[in-house]
Amino acid sequence: MASPPQQKLGAQAAPTQRSRVVYDTYILGPGDSLQIELLDIPELSGVFAIGPDGTLYLPRVRALYVEGLTVEELRLFLTQQFRAYVRSPQIYIRPMGYRPVRIYVGGEVRRPGYYTLSGVQAIDADQSSSEAQQDVATGSTALGQGTTTTRSSITGGSSSSTLFPTVFDAIRTAQGITPFSDLSQVQVTRRQPLSSGGGRIRAKLNFLSLITDGDESQNIRLFDGDVVSVGKSPVVLREQLLKAGQTNLSPQFIQVYVSGRVKTPGGVTMPQGSTLTQAISLAGGMQLLKGKVEFVRFTREGEIDRRLFSYSPGAASGSPTNPILMAGDIIRVQDSALSAAVGVLNELTGPFVGVYSVYSLFRP
Image: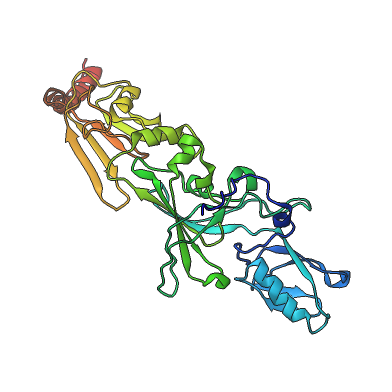
């Protein structure tokens, strides 16, 4: 028997599916605010915020520790708590304000580290917080109790429709990508609610399809505690770098430094994906008497990539003698044997010329 067709993203849900929203993915924490309604009991209803210690203070039941629960888990928990005061309590909960999320961005980005991202801070009365949710991770591994599942999911949505922080926002906040970033290998790791077994799940994303084809399904929403990791390519991906430079994912320009036998030495601001020969051209080109080119790059591993080679204006982009540049690269055009000899001669004769000039001032 053929399986029923899956509902397409953005299609209208059936009325029975829309009659009730189940919040089973978002994990509550300090800073979230919730609208809690006990049916027909307005004095116990209202908008309440989770405090810094993870507790929710409510009438009658007082302080309850709710950090780490989903909204649906909280509803069941409050139903049990209010049974001591209300017969058959019917509780409805809706998030009204979301806390900023703190995530870690690692892998091949320009500046890995922890970042705090903010999205929508308050939800209007007619806006549902479950908008545009979608399942984008299949075949991922759950890290909990040493078990592995064949299918897990991270639910998210596009930044354009939910206005919550997404993978795009995370990479951009980490100052974008490098020439070695592989956007087809982006991974998001997320902790699961306790009701789903706890532990962590992973989603592997082909984020490159977002900037090439506009595939928003790969730009999932981020939750507090998520870890975003960008893969590294062994070779420079110039076409990807140029494509990313056309968006606001990475800074449009980088700055490198050109010194030595060039006409205008100093800092040079260039577009992403530029090469060494283009940097030398922007520095006014080489002077007549020139030697070899010295290229220096400080890698993220704490090492120095230093190359010394003869200048070749026609070298292919990305070749060892014409590398794709990164911010902070240093290019130095050395002296030739003749220019070095002239320089030494000037240093030797300079003092004598000065002494002779002084002597000529005082000569009768």
